[in-house]
Image: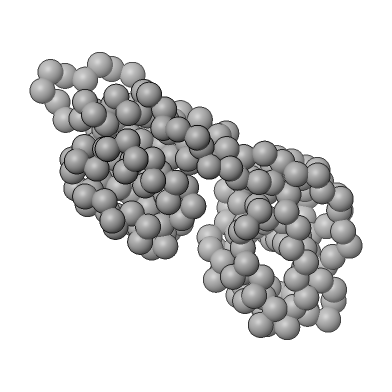
Length: 238
C-alpha cells in the first residue's frame, strides 16, 4: 500500500468487528488503498451444540455458521455473506434472505409451514430474541440454541489509541449494536471523544447508527443495505 503524501488527508479506518471478520475487512480496506486500524470490540468463542430435529436451521450471523458442524438440514441465512459461511462449513441446502431479520421472517412466512416442525435458531448468547418473537407471532415454534458467545474486549488496542490521538483515522466502521456500544464505552473511557470530531462513523444499520449518536463524530452515515460491501461503498475514494 502506498505511503500517504505529506499533508494528505488521513486514510486510517477503524474496524470494530470481531475476528476473524476484522481481518477480512482489513484485507478489503488495504486492497482499496485504506489503512486498516483494528479495534475488535468483541471476542467470539464457540459453545457446545448438539443438532436437533427441525424443518430448517436459521442463521443470523457468520459467527453462528462458523460455530456449527454440518448436518442434513435446510439452512436459511440472514444474508448472502452468512449463507456463504454456511456453505464453507459444508451445509448444502442453503438459502439467503435479503439481509435482515424482517426479511428472514418474511421468507419463513412465505416458504415454510408452521405445522411442518420447529425452526432451529442458532444464535450468539443474548441475540435474536426479537426475531424469535416475530417468528412465533407467525405461528412457528422456534427453538433457540446458543452456539457461540461474544465477550466484550477488555481494552482498546494501543495502535488504535495512537492513531485516533494523532488524527490518523478518517472513518470508523460499526457492524452491530453490541459492538458499537462496547466501542463507544472504550472511546469514552479513553478520553477520545474530541479526537472523533474529524472521524466519520459508518453504521451497517439504523439501529447501529442510533448507538453512535452520543459522540461528536464528523458525521454518522448508514449503509443502504446491511452488508460489508455497502459499508465500504460509503468510504468513497482514497
